[in-house]
Image (cartoon, helix red, strand yellow):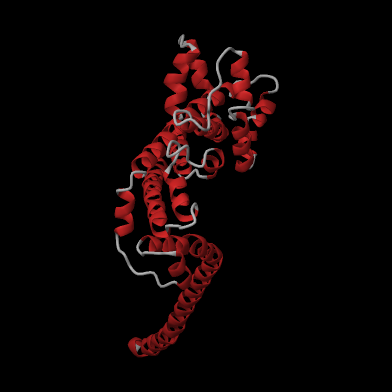
Length: 330
């Protein structure tokens, strides 16, 4: 009797559960559908933000690089450049460039110009950063004045240095004359032309090193210097034991960015010496421009080949920069 009464109850419960299962499944499907729509909307929003940058990179980086590579692999003349029917020449342009007598001096000058500039820029930058890290009157004003070389247009800086280094009317020879030193042909002597452009480039690059390294110094706790002073460390020991080791991550980024930038310096050298006299101050950047645009019979293929070699060197330093940055972030 009890069993008979219980059977209708169980049947009603089973029917109720069966009617609720489809509605629960439908709810889960609706939730999954909403999540998919939200993810799709998020992806579309992300692509909408990325699209302008992608178009910019494709138009101003990818396509020019492709055209430069195409130029270096074809035998272009002025006529074939206009008609766009230059024959494919493979690696002939690169072979011609590598066997050119100018390649050795240009590569050597590029390395000397880059490494010496970075060495003096970094040394002066870290010295000034440590100097301005100490509080004293007018520190902020003086620090702002040191940014002027970085803010000036490069053509203005190069023209100013050209005037200062002028053999006949330059202020540098005038000051050296007052000191009893004879005049120096800074821009027209094979022995001094490269030195002149290095001095100008060091002057331009110091503010960048100062700003970055000074910001790195702000992250070093002052308690470390107080503890070192209590232990009897002098300022020089504090620099080598605290400042320099803790600035290594910032220093690595500063030096690598400086290398990438200095490798492709063109306008400063071209305005001051045009790579001369002869090849005394010619770098890969100025040589590439001279081949492609500096004569009545331009050599587009070899000029593009030199540019690609320079891009490859910069790419190596760029990958090194990315690796150092990832290591620091990890």
